[in-house]
Image (cartoon, rainbow, N blue to C red):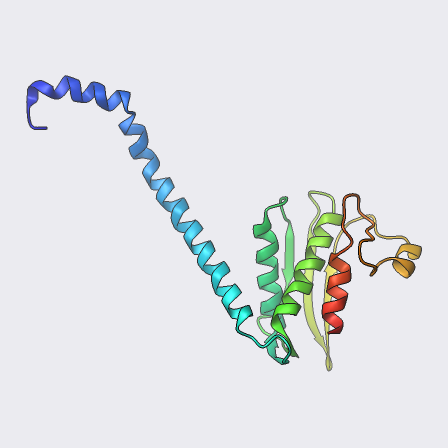
Amino acid sequence: IHDESALPEREELRRNLKIDALMEDFGPLIEGTLEGALRITDIVKNLRRLSFVDPTENTKVNIAEVARNAVQWVKRSGKQLVNLEDNLPQELIVEGIEGPLHQVFVNLIQNAIDASPANEPVTLSVSADGERVVIEIVDHGVGMSPAFIRDKLFKPFVSSKEGGFGIGAFEARQLAHA
């Protein structure tokens, strides 16, 4: 390495192996790796949190935080670009079971995104109305016919969207009633 006479060979080897380009890529590669590790940590943390709760016992749940987590899960699914606006309070405590509530939000948010044109936002809001909690998920889709809503909306394997499986709304309703 310290032999000056080998300098031209080292420089040629450096060019052939593209060492300079590799060195430039290290920073972004490390940043991407760290970001991926943080995402995985967050996913595992949420899975652990959901898995250690007794799935049959109501507890005090911050429904606003559950909604925020569901928004992040949907955004990370990466099926399409998501323009999702949320109007969520910091805290709104309800009695419920966190895992199923999370799944209800994920299903309904994903359905709203699927129904909306690509550049239109989906808005999620959660608020208190006396003793009740009001959850609104607003999309800009064409909507469903009154007949579909009356006769088919919550039936499994029936969907108003092309390629839909008819599971999201059905499952959300089943979980909400549980």
